[in-house]
Length: 275
Image (cartoon, rainbow, N blue to C red):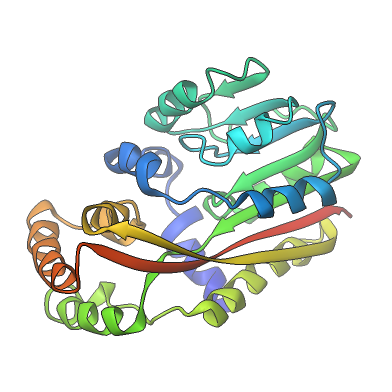
């Protein structure tokens, strides 16, 4: 867990708050277009476990362009969604126009004015790792009613088939060795997710962890896959010319395998109660 914590600190919550606020701005629209949604079967399990209904009150932390928000807003429950990135905030406004009970606030969770014991659930969809744990866990616990739930949703990175990964790996090794990461099969993704889930318990603010996951397979066009890569943090750090050269090589290899890319990932939830 120490290595994972160190990675999260270096790449996510350890960044300056102002940098975190604007990190995804260059890829905001791409993020909305091609980041995968959460399977409805997964959402249904979360709703059941956390006993959510139209009478529930939810706080969503870092809602982004509202990837997960509509699935919970459809219950009819009241939602307060905080999002620090102004580009994401405006996209979320467009996404949530049909849900009058959804209140969007353009601020970070760190800066959000705490409403103690006001929510039946605190929700974070692939966003909680951007908040320093010494702030995130105690503040989330304080916002929850005694019988409330912390709901952490995760969509792990989409992985191409291993044979395609090997072909792409050669290009990364030549152009951008730092992006040539180890292949994450479903077992590897599950191991990472298990560590993430245990962090809530290790914080001392939460207990009774319930976890679940679904293995998902999707098909993207080559264009969609390259757009997806643009939304991942390591690619956001690349200089424009570096990215252009790299993506040209990636496209060439991908198109040799056809017009589409078969991808797989693990979609998961962690649900816990205040300690």
